[in-house]
Structure formats: C-alpha cells, structure tokens
Image (cartoon, rainbow, N blue to C red; front, side):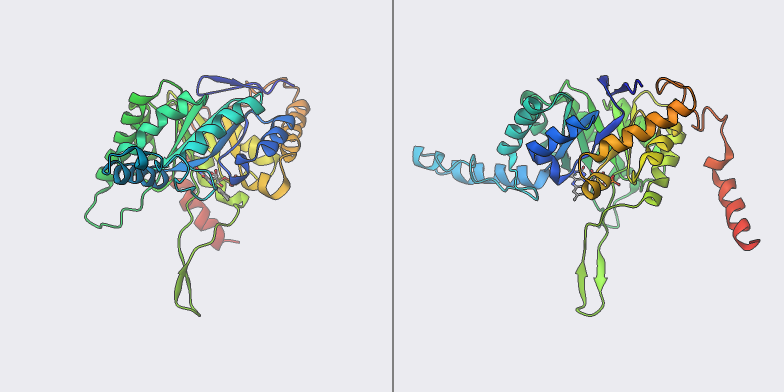
Length: 332
Ligand SMILES: Cc1cc2nc3c(=O)[nH]c(=O)nc-3n(C[C@H](O)[C@H](O)[C@H](O)COP(=O)(O)O)c2cc1C
C-alpha cells in the first residue's frame, strides 16, 4: 500500500506524524517511531521564555565586558525549559535527531511576541531542521486588546520568521478565532506553507477545597478532534497550503476521518503517549486495511473526499446542521 503524502513540500512515506511531545527528545524513542513507520517527527517546542531568558543573561554578563565574565555566557546555564532542553541543547537535539531517523525532523518554536526570540528560527534551520512549526499562543488578558490586534500580532510574527528562514514553515494555531478561514489565508500570505489545526489549549481550573488555581495537562480524547475535523473539511482544497490535522487521534478511524476531510497529514501525541511508539504501526495498518477493503492502492482518491468543497458546500459543516441537531435531541 502506498501511503506517500506531501506535507510542506516534503514527501513523506506516511501521513502520520508524531506531533510535539516531551518523548520526542529521546533518541531511542525517535528511532522506535521511525521503525514503526512514522512519516515525520515534530520535536517538542523551544519556548520564547527560554530564549528571552538566555538573551537577558547575555545582556547582564556583557555589561561587565571582561574575559572572565564571558566564560559565564549562558552556553551552559540557559533555562532548560519544561523538557530539560535549553536553547543550545535544542540545536544539538535537532542535529542528533537528523542523524538518528530517516524521516523529516520538524523543529518547533513556541512564542507570542514579535521580538528577538524569533531569530532563533535561523539557528534551527542551520542545525538541520527540515521544517519549522511555529506554535503561537497568547492569552489577551488586557480587555482593551481587540481580536484584530491579536491576529495582526500573530501575522507579524509569521512575516518576521519568514525573513529568517527558507525552510518550510507551518503555523500551529488554536481554534479560538472568529474567522479561521480568513486568518488561515493571512498566515499563508505572510509566508506559512502549512497550518496545523489545532493546538490543544489547557485552561486553568479551580480547586474548591484549597481555593487555588490548578491546571493539569491531560491526554486528549477522540471527541475533542471534531472542531479540527470541521475546519480541515472547510479549508481543504480551498487554501494554498498543507493542512495537518491535530487532536484526538485515538485510533486509525480518526486518521481516516481526517484524511477524508482533506488533511494532508495527521498528527498524534496522546495516542503515542498512551500506547507507545509502536502504535504508529497499528494506525498505519488500520488505514491500509480500510484502503484495501475499497480496492484503493493509495490515498489519492480518499483524501478530501468528504471535504466541504468536494461535497458541494455540504450543510453538515454549517449552522443549519446545528439547528437540526438540537431539534433532534428533543424528538428522541
Ligand atoms: C505532555 C504534552 C506535551 C506537549 N508539548 C507540546 C509542545 O512542546 N509544543 C507543541 O506545539 N505542542 C505540544 N503538545 C501538544 C501536542 O503536540 C498536540 O498538539 C496535542 O496534544 C493534541 O494532539 P493529541 O490529541 O494527539 O494529543 C504537547 C502535548 C502533550 C500531551
């Protein structure tokens, strides 16, 4: 079975991609993903906060302007971030991952302001990343900031990063925008080659016993993927960029649904954390069996077969479907 897929101009042997995950810092784990037939690997994010901190250290040490001070430049004492990988170690991780696996390695930058951290994209390219995934996420706590301002900031970040790199660039975004289609178009115009729909946001919770704000990073469930399925279906064949589906790929059926909606690739983290890297093979086999049962040899026919465009603007993707659904609940 031929599962070859195109993503960001790269040819992948499979549409299944391991999305950013803490396990993707472990070279043995990456090797296992490769062996199981993964199409590409996204490294966990390097966060703007880590890079900003490193720059601050450089500034504070350089004010002393002495050879003694320079030995403390933050090569070894940068913040290591949530995954224990600081900015320098991250570049080393890219280069080691490239040597370890046979599939494309996508570096991930995660930030929210249009400032100096962006320059790190160039170093990631120089370290050998095949592509860059940019995860932009901010919480506009200032209630005077408009949606337009938030979007403009996101677009400026993409425009700026594009100036630093030639490698393909994907933007991973969250679904909480008023008009995903227009924003997607703006990202593409700013230089994005692909969109990852969607980033999964962890919101804070309240502990009613200790009166504390808590947050916990849980793994996803399949039903969380429906909003991504809808937007992949709405954008497929209509935007000039690759579409990667992300969230809720619990089993091979989800992979098939995303491909039918029109995804070029399908990303997974939670399922791999639950089942281990060998689960890629199970997902792959499920897709192959589905194709075989329909006498299809590759993904060409199925991809986008259930997209909004292919179904001629099917109302199931739209508001009228919602009205029908709420009505059907009462008539049960
Ligand atoms: C423990 C954990 C760590 C993650 N770290 C990152 C990260 O560093 N950067 C990022 O863009 N996404 C990160 N993600 C999000 C995943 O890449 C993915 O987008 C999200 O989990 C939805 O996919 P899933 O439903 O297959 O888990 C992380 C997810 C988990 C569960």
